[in-house]
Image (cartoon, rainbow, N blue to C red; front, side, top):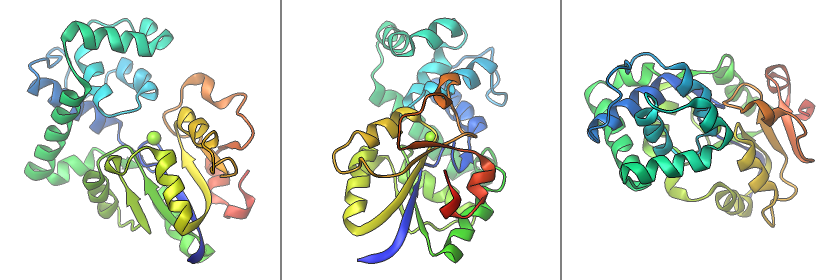
Length: 249
Ligand SMILES: [Mg+2]
């Protein structure tokens, strides 16, 4: 067993701000489904999309959101996202799988046809790349665990010159299960995420109750996410993130 501690990071909303790409790819995916929001430009992220992005868990949800954007009431979606989503899916007769396939095909096309333009739609959060590189000197390895497809994430990490010890994408399964597997091989010293529900699911998974969890303040958070965090989940601000791991909350 490798005894260097391993710190595991979510990707979207933690390492990289991909808002411009989420909107662009979701818009293109809608076009593949003959449902492009034609009055909205794929190059300009609408406020309502930005506002609702923190509720998104899987990529396909962004496709539905983009298609619905011209007609949806943001307040209704903010109040009952799950119900609004289910009813829009039903009305359109869509399945999540076909939306995900359209999104993957859009990204795939973009990567093949204009790789540098696609990469440029992603921005690492300020200081992130430098900080990740410092972990090595601290004796800490880091890994990436994301609901994004492995191949797209690998492409982006490479373009940033980042080389995690390991990368697990959507294909690897649910995050708590992947963390349990990783824990058999390595000593996990933390999991860093911007989705509170995922951290709560991790902490309530038998075997992961003691894994320190960090919610990053710079990610795609819902307004209520930062308050009343349960024990074991700490809010991580950029200044603490830059400090040595031993000083994290
Ligand atoms: Mg995230």
